[in-house]
Image (cartoon, rainbow, N blue to C red; front, side, top):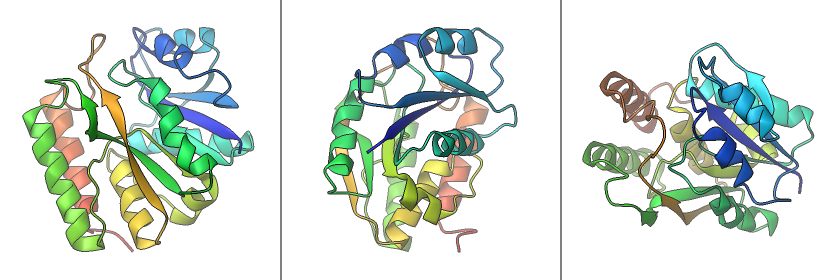
Length: 228
């Protein structure tokens, strides 16, 4: 199956090149970095590492993901995998995440930080609380208990198209998981590594306003508001 890896990024010049180079050789037909209008050398570093770059200047994590999916469709992808552009993740975990899909055992596979080896302090108390609340709400409202709402994941493109994703914010991952439950997809969660960032700062947990804004978007989706 043809895999395209999508990496939304904004001001990640210190880590984006290393992340791209750490994706196992031969795993993906292409790596697409969606740059959100970075003010640093993110685009240059991504291109130097061999990625295709799409610039999406309109704000929103979900909007960046959708731009990446559109490019992946043009490249003939059958599976799309999403990875962070920061050094908090281990790109080699994509091998574990993709295996159930490539073997035909799942439609969507989610990397779980809480099932995996999270470095002490990598997930802050507020993140753990918000994550627990959001997953409980999804279980209560949609009948599937997830362990995490992390961004590292892979899904068959055909299934993603059927979801008709609408979220343009950090509610995007939650919307995908809600719709996967609603549509009865074969869902798998696998452990992934997660550590404290060494370079740059988180656009969510590293900024109080960003954390609140993202948290509200996630809880809105998990609560079922606006869902069809």
